[in-house]
Length: 391
Image 1 (cartoon, rainbow, N blue to C red):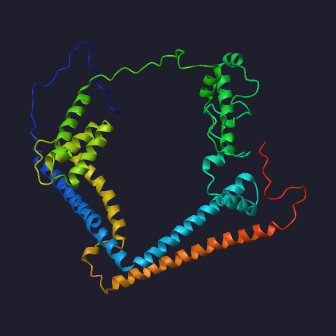
Image 2: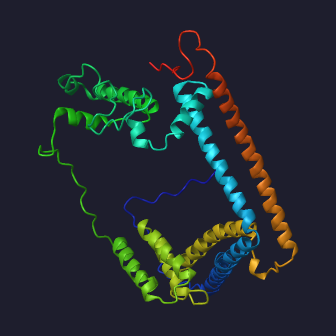
Image 3: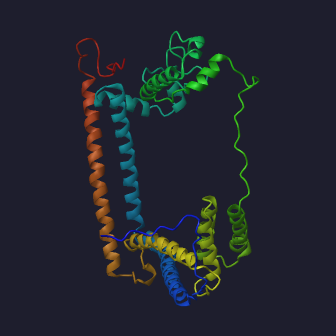
């Protein structure tokens, strides 16, 4: 059987040993390992950032200059072809959108879009003022002559303010939900933004800016705290040290720390700001005797987190043709032949894409020209006048 626990008699004081031992721990080996880990991460960051800067400031501009001088005519032809493809894609997208919203065939939508494109002198504002049952004539909540949600008004027919004010909170919530559903249909059909119900109610009640409005209680100003004061003091010190005007040798490391300080201060993250201050204090080869181990570990974690993004950026840059370009010999080399083959392959794909879009548009043009000669469909409606009935 388990031995029963001894109970301390009530009222009897608990005696403690008078022995006091002080255990001294030498944390210098731990600090040295943490410092070495930080310095290794900082040097790796320095190496990768140097490769990125060399690629962006030296290799990439040199590559673009060489490419323009050797393949200038070919590049111009590819750009013009890509611009034509983008224009044809835009026209096809406009045709499909017209066919969807007006519920007409692609041929009828093609004729409508071509008529609009053949009148470039008509501005977009002029087209918006034209009558179109499926497109609004302006914003619905501007109080002007734009299209309204319920004919001549943005409020439902028979709406009475006295009855609305007498509704309970649950009934008003249901009314707002129903109004939101109608507003969603209005935006989908007309393409115009639906009016805000609160603005509509205030406008129709006849409220003006001279009338007193309910006072919105303001939140009390934040109280001074030790953490908040420490955050402001540390931020001001780092700004003085890292500001470009006060630091003539403002390199990429100082720029990165500057952005890190700004982000930490905006997030009100004191630990993150102290880690940035530690990086400023320690540097790459500095000592860390004045820094707590927890802050040194946070500095290492932040650098390793930044290394993940830099490594992904390095992998993407190495796939570019300009990577390490300044060390290449391009005149009559195999590199020039490979790049020419790549550009010709790109041009071949662009040619195929352009032919496909041109074939679609030419087929629609031929059908549109042929259907004009035909008769109207039974019922007296042709493709141009056939539209959807949403309600």
